[in-house]
Image 1 (cartoon, rainbow, N blue to C red):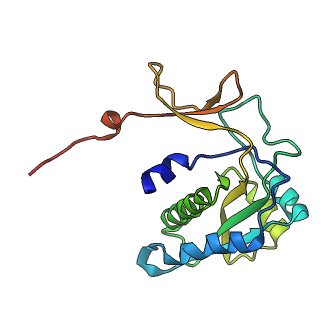
Image 2 (tube, rainbow, N blue to C red):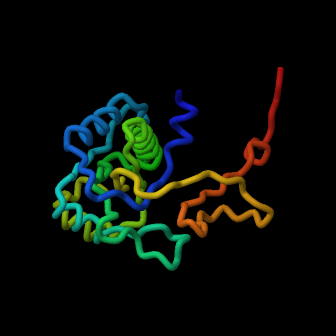
Length: 193
């Protein structure tokens, strides 16, 4: 059921690096994006897929992880992603990149969660270095990286507390906790018949 899948789909930042993701799985995840809505049906997104350890290390060097966890520099050796999907946008059609990227990335993440794969959307990137490492032509903007692997951490949704902080954090057991606002708080107005 979609409700369970959405709740299961968390941003994971530590992975079991011994778990390999085959390239066919990554291709199947990207293939689903072909069926997604896209502004004016322009389909301006392109994807780079990697499950190659050497390439993954180069991609990892271009990423920054978990801005709210100031005392954590990201996954250590043995906890890094087994694969990446990099989303590119055609520079001739930049107007809706954010919308199309969000739709595609969430589709990939939900489908991955259904397969027991976790991921993390990373927008904190050294785009110039990533462009160079992956040999991306100037025709495409580097928009987003999705790190993927078998989760090696637990992530839980909690209610936003009285402090009203939405910053995710780790508890004493090193679980990743993500505060979410209540339904009453996010519904601005209801107008009925």
